[in-house]
Image (cartoon, rainbow, N blue to C red; front, side, top):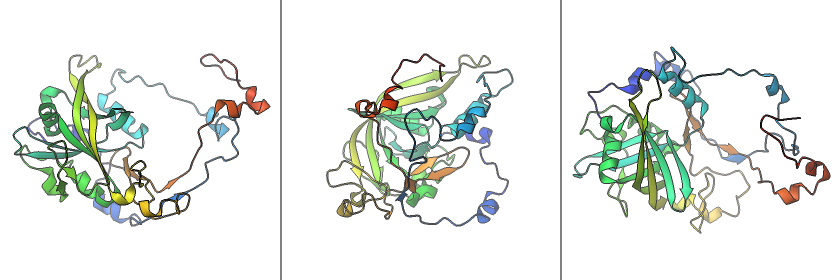
Length: 311
């Protein structure tokens, strides 16, 4: 990552602990948990029932102006990363145009937005004029790989966020292994259960709406097309369709609805320095209007309702 400029991460002071290792040592050890299904929170929920806990309607809300006088913009950042959770992490590999240096970095502004063509978004803090290595390489080469982070290498992935000087590879600090891609030059991460080879489609640069910095470029959103995929054999079904966190292809049918060994073990981003695990799930079928309204009581709910109206 580039240095010589203000390190935004240090300004944010995300770490809330004076001695993190001491705090961590006081916590229970990380334990393997079998992936399992539970019931939905309220299995007897009926159409029109509203929230599971009606008491939430008695809770008050606070109005927050993101640009209120005296409110630092960094407060919006801290609030949003603790509110928009869990978030998938884009683990991005890029190479410099001359091919002599490579970069590997995690991004919590990441998601998919389309499937045909497969389109993914990556968010970079700062403008193009202050682009760090990942964005700089992506802008110049138009290529990257995006790897999905799992429990097996979360510490290694986190260490690639180190503020290394230009020319120093995060790959070395992580100890992770590069594997050749098919259609792009950047390596994919060999340890990743799922990887995406991507080509840049479009970028949009964002300008601050803070009255104090009206012309400041604050971020770049990159739209990346997935042109090739890599999926670990034991995590995907035989048709190359579904990756499941708790299934191996050779026992797919037997354990579809049973507790089982977790395969993908996805990690998500929470607020501050916190991460989340996915070790249990519940299923909710999508409702079909024609089927639902066969019930006379549910059919009574079929009526127009204006904004802000409720019974």
